[in-house]
Image (tube, rainbow, N blue to C red; front, side, top):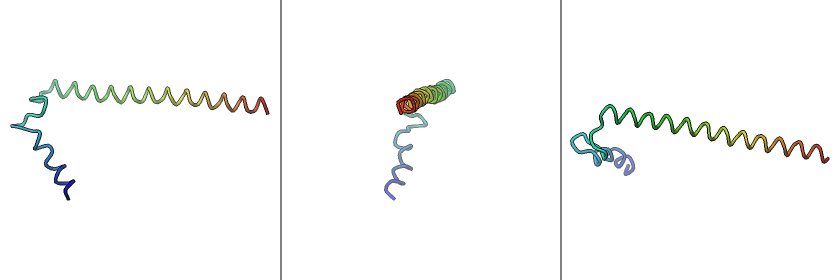
Amino acid sequence: MTLTTMLVAAPMAFAENGEGLLGKADDKTVTFFCFGVMAFFVILVIGLSLVQGALERRKEKRRYDIERLS
């Protein structure tokens, strides 16, 4: 019950006459924020894909070495 109350009251606590912590949110601010969110997820997916590829190459090299030495 307390958690629900805090979640409902939080937006009202940081808003004053429709302005948030960064001031009035106009179209330019919202657009740049959304572009930032999209860029973050694109970079995250690319970075994690590169890590996964490196780990797969490492796994295949280990398998090859085990088969070669056995």
